[in-house]
Structure formats: structure tokens, C-alpha cells
Length: 87
Image (cartoon, rainbow, N blue to C red; front, top):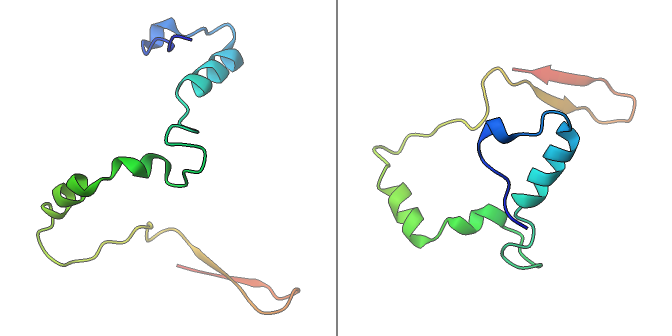
């Protein structure tokens, strides 16, 4: 099977479901690193890539991985207890 074109003009706009299915199959990564692989594309992060990333560090500061506007929902004890949302 040849890979579909990456040119958007080549998309089959008459049958978008088939187009999505074709591209999902062509560009999937399942099994790329073996059937028992659990890392997926994290396999691209090799020791050289870690060294390259570490060279970008300028100070020891931290950054948040979630948006400050993303609410945190906490479930209170008990099945009927209401939830509490905090920011």
C-alpha cells in the first residue's frame, strides 16, 4: 500500500469517512516498535535527545503542565456527596 498524498488538494472530499479511515491506517504507529511496546512515539526520545533537551535549561524554574484556568474537580467521600471544583 502506498501512503496517501500529503497535499490537501488531493483529499477525497466526496467521501471524508473513507479518507479518514485510509489516512488513519496509513499513518498509524501501532506495532511500529513491536507488539509489546508500551512507549509508542516516546521511543524517539533517546539519550542524545535527552542531552539536547537538557542543554536548553537556563534556570531551575518550574512550569505548570496544565492551564491555570483548568478547574480541578475533587470527589468528596461517599457516593452521594457533591463534587467540589477549585481553580
